[in-house]
Image 1 (spheres, rainbow, N blue to C red):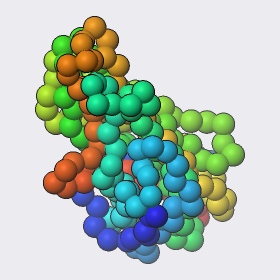
Image 2: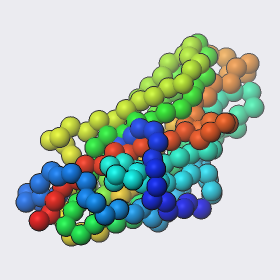
Image 3: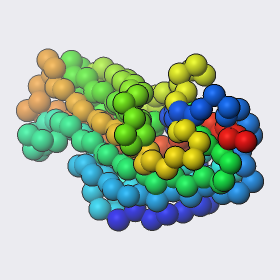
Image 4: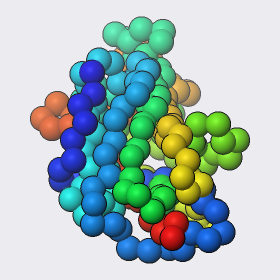
Length: 212
């Protein structure tokens, strides 16, 4: 189960959303936005393994995962090669404002044998809107280190939620590993967006517009 929080964010990630022509770019409002998780599905975010916080300055929110790892290898099940998380978020913003996701930075750790590869992908869209923003990032083995990948939405491509509308923001992320030419019987290759010591954060940076 996810909890709604409105305090400090810590890491890097973001996305975008759509607004009418009269809405103008602006600084973040003084009043806090709040985020409620309406639905959370997927093998990458089982119950009580993810949490959301909103930054004090209203410029970002963070999704923290604690059990998000895809892997192939001797002790892996046939379904472990892919993990995903689908979040439906009810984002409530101060009156007179709308927003878009402007960028997103994903962090984790990966260990890939020579010949294996991994992929992190994400897409973002508002409920009922056909427009979607999707990004994919690949890692190839041999690799054993922390990884970070960023999604950046160009100004012309920012999709703002129309002023006055209330629609859920959907964020779908996906991790997968392919053994490729590596020997999956002797080496476990994996990619994670989590940590045994501390959870890995995914921060979504918000672009604001005034509806006045």
